[in-house]
Length: 180
Image 1 (cartoon, rainbow, N blue to C red):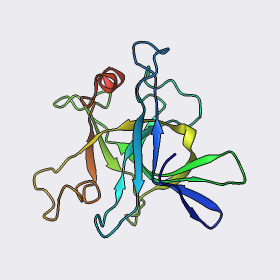
Image 2: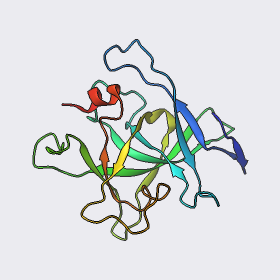
Image 3: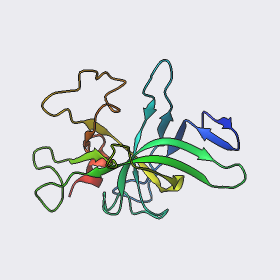
């Protein structure tokens, strides 16, 4: 873990590296990938919060069974209680937008469409999960719709957008995991 910062009794990290196994050979461990949860700063008022594939339990069949039993979330905080061996993540959830087919994959793009999971008052839905439930980075593409938000920049596009495409074309491994 890198970027350690102590606050009170919790240790907070701004990045963590994850490794996953190959889609075609579960004995092949792929190169580590860095996930970031960087709070707002003067240089980036929106911060940087990477998106991830998570499972409801520590044991996972990702990437062999794709999103079945998994979900997509945005990583907002990585932390550790120094009094235990447990590491945790605070995440904001996305939900899959239902499509007119049984796979919920958009027929035009071949990708899942996601929306931020929000409460009735517009507040994002989040939860604390064990860090071991995070299995992979997830590359999202903002869906601007008919008209893009007038304040979008390269630093604000993820925070000012509410709909996204889960980009299965991001890597060969991701493509195979998310293709029916």
